[in-house]
Amino acid sequence: MNRKLYNTILSLSLGYVLFSCSKKSDEFFQLRDRGGIDGAIWSNEGAIQYHLNEAYDVIMPTFAYDLFPSGANIETHFASDENYWAATNAQARKTIGVNGILAANDIRYVGFKYQGANYGDNRYFDIARCNSGIKYIPEGTIPAESKRRFLGQYYALRAMAYLDLTKIYGGMPLVLEPQNPDNLNLSGRASAREMFNQIVKDCDSAMVNLQGVTWVDGTERGKLTRTAAAALKGKALLLWASPQFNPRDNSLHPYDASRWQVAFDACKAAYDIAIADGKSLMSSYESIFRTEGAANTEAIIVRSYSATVAKRGHNVESRSRPLSAGGAPNDIYFASTWLMDAYTMKDGTPITRAGSGYDPILFWKDRDPRFEATIAYNGCSWNLGGSTNRKQWTYETALGETGLRGVYCKRFTTPELVNASVPYSSDFGGSGMDWIELRLPEIMLNYADAAIEVGNIDAAKDMVRKIRQRAGMIAGASDYGLGLATSVEQMRDLLLNERQVEFAFEGKRTEDLRRTRRYHLLSGQLVSPAVMLNGTNDAQKKVLRDQLEAIVDPVAGTCYRDRLDMNNKDTLRKYFTYGTVAPSGNGGFNVLPEYYFYSLSNFFLYSSPLLEQTIGWEGGRFDPLN
Image 1 (spheres, one colour):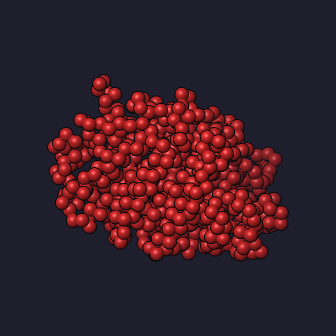
Image 2: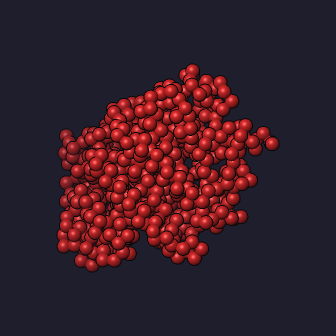
Image 3: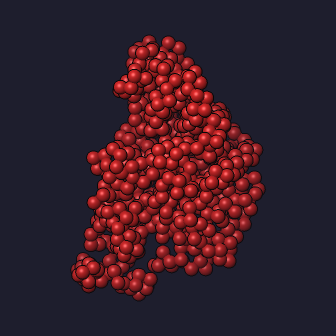
C-alpha cells in the first residue's frame, strides 16, 4: 500500500498512536510498544489523568466564537441571523448565502490534518484518546473506584465527540476500538440511527460509572458528571426526534412520532437528576457568565479558563468591550436586528403584537430584562473598568469609540476588570472567565421542546415560565406571554424564540435552526443597528457632536451627553437618528436545504474507498436517514 495513503487511512480511522505522547518526558508516555502507548500508563492514575486531560482539551468545546483554527472552517457552524459577523466573515457569508454558497470541500469539521495534537485538527484522533482509555483502563491495576471515575469521563467525552459529528454530518464511521497498524478495522459511514444508539449507550455508561462521583471545585472544576451525561443523553435523543433527523414531510423517511416520547423521558430524567444534584437557576441572568465554580448553580458542562495560567485564557472580554473601555470590538458581538427583535416586552408580549407598547425609538423600554443584561445601546449604563457611573455611547464617531456600531454585547464582560488587563496577550490576560457549554436552562428547554411534541403543553410552559421568572419578567395579562401561544405550532415558535434570547451569543442559534429545519427559511437581509447624529451634513453633525461632548464637569470628566434624559423622545430626536448598517455585498439569506447534512471534504473523503459523499452534494450517495 502507498505509504502516504496508509498513514492517511490510519490517522483518520482513529490511529492508535497518541500523537502528542511522543512529546512527553513522563516515563509512562515513552512509546515502547508497537501499539503506540506503553500499557503501564493504565496502572498509574497520574498518567491516566494526563492522558484524560488531553482528551478534555481537544473535545470540550471552547468559548463560543473564540477559537477558529486556521484551515478548519469552523465558522460555518456558527453562522446564523444572530450577529453582524455572519455577513462579514468569508466562511460564514457563504454558509448563510449572503455572498456565495458553500462548496463540498469547505466543510472540514471532522479534521484537516493527518495528525491531531490540537483542538480541531482531527476529530478521530480526539476520539482515539477515549477509545484507548475505555479499552485499557479495565486491564490496569488501579482501584476499581478510580477506574469507574476515569471510565465515566471517557464515555461522556466520546459521546460529546460523536454527537457533534452526527449533528453536522448525519452519519460517520463509528470506530469504538483502538486501531492497530497490524490489524486495521476500517468501515464506511454508519447510519444516523447507529450513531445515536452508540451515543446513548455511551451516555448510559457514563451515568453508571459517574453515579455518586463528586469533584473538588477548586482543582477538579470542569470534570464531567452524571448530570452532564444525563443532559447529553437528553440532548441527543431530542436531536434524533427533531425535524433534522425526523422530518414530517419526507416520503422516503416516514415520520416517527414515538421518538418524541423517548426524548421526553430522557429530557425529564435529565432535569430531575440535575435538580436532585442541587442545580438551580441563578437568581440573576446577568451574573451567569460572571460567576464561577460551585457558586454558579446552573453550570453543568464547563471548560475552565484562567487569566493567570499560561495559554489558558481567551480574548472574549476584548472582543466584547468598546474601544473606550480597553476593548477591540468584534462583529461577533454586534447584535443583528433579528436578535434585537426577538426580545419580547417585559410581560412576554412579542414586540410585533398590536398593543404591545413597543416603541422603535425607545426600543429598550419595558423589554424582557435579558435585553438590558445583554445589549449595550446608545446612552445606557454599562459599568466597565471598575467604574460605577459609566455610560456607553454608540452614535457615529462618538468620542473614544470607532466605527458605526449601534450596540455592544454585555454578557461576557467583567465590570471590575481594569481596562489595561482586558487584552489576552502573550498567553496571559483577559477575564479568564469559564465557558459554560451547557447549563440548566438548556436542559429545561430541551424538556419543554419534547413536552410540546408529546402533548404536554403544561409542562413545556412551566419550564419557560420558570426561566422567564428568573429573568425578571412580569406575569402581565397573559402569563408571561405564554397564554398567547394557543397551538402546538405557536408554542414551537415561542420556544425557538426563547432559545434565541436565553442563549444569545452562546453559539447555539445555528444548531437550533438546523435541528428544527428552519435554517433554510431565513429570509431578508442581515443588518445591525446604527445610530447617526441628526444632521443633514457634516457641519450640522459637528455642531451636535461638539455640544454632546462638551465637558461640563472637569473633575469627574462628565460630558453634556451624560446628563441627557435618554428616555425623552424629544431629546433623542434632537440629537440622534436610528437606522441600520448592512455589510457590503449582502444579498440576503440563502441557506440551501442540503446544509442540514454537510458534505465530507476531499481530505476526509479520499482517506478510504469505503466512504461515500452525502446526498445533495456532488457525487453524493450516502443518506444518513436510511
